[in-house]
Picture 1 (spheres, rainbow, N blue to C red):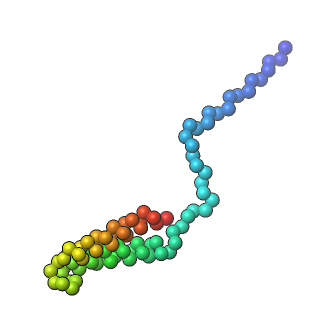
Picture 2 (cartoon, one colour):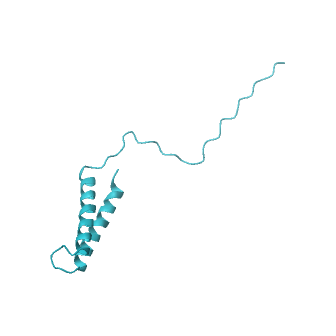
Picture 3 (cartoon, rainbow, N blue to C red):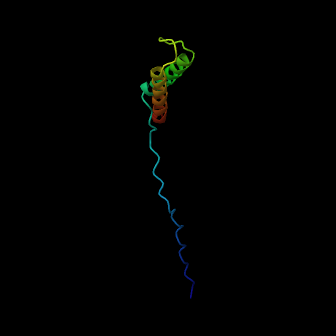
Amino acid sequence: MPKTKRRKAPPPKPSRYTPPKPKTAKRSPLWVPVTMFTALGLGMAVVLGDYLELLPGGAARNGYLFLGLGLLVGGFILSTQLR
């Protein structure tokens, strides 16, 4: 009597889900990088201007420092949205 061929077991499926790749990559609108670099540049300029006492008011003021740091933080937040 002829021997019957046994079917091979299917390969095991991976245990982790891998999402499908998007067909088109998302791109940020033009205003995101422009605003990000503007905020970072202005923030650095305000902090340096405050440190060098180049801004109006003479001595270094906390208001200018907070404005510069706020612009820097805003620039960093926008950098996380850049694709």
